[in-house]
Image 1 (spheres, helix red, strand yellow):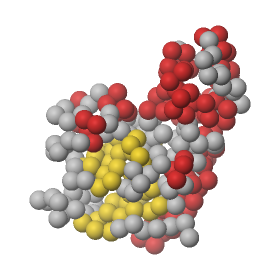
Image 2 (cartoon, one colour):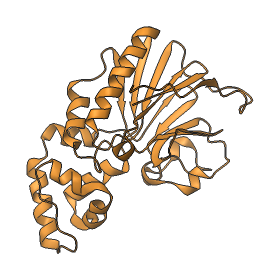
Image 3 (tube, helix red, strand yellow):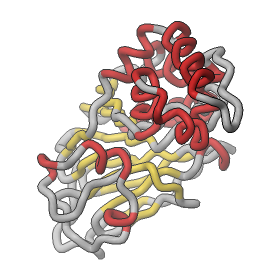
Length: 255
């Protein structure tokens, strides 16, 4: 059985006033996919069925980034998002640090060695590019960069270039990695939205909205007073998680 509803509750025990999604809206936020097109397809089916049963006036799909790397089918994930969007949904696609790394590699090989270590090797191979060997010199990284520029479909390049950094719905803000405490939400730096960890994860600060994020893997969704993390390590665990928000209710769907 591929679906588990992990919980449905209210945040009122932890909040003076329960955070709320916009009226007449049902929001579905997707955690880090990392090349697992198979899991995304399954989760889309679960979300479609859930939305059909609920019949909310407005359905929104928010993808938190990290579509590529680590898993073996990054191009298929992008094709699925472009060619098979959830019918009747508003779709919001956010940028993750892995998409940021690919875009940077297309312009400069300097990030190449680090990118390959945290998942770029699988993405290069999935686009038909031979990854540089460990310890490869600059010439081999430049060869891979030029090959990727040729083999990356133009529509994939446009998809990556058009990703948003954050999105707001009611009392929630969606960002790939999180936000920097003490900085207004409309002044957050791109590097923090894509890469931040400890300063955000261990903060007790009120951020102004509940931050829904991925980027940091946890075995189960990480629900805190000021944030909800939904990266459950799909590329390795097989568990791709979706947070469902409606009114003051929240729930999870998972493969």
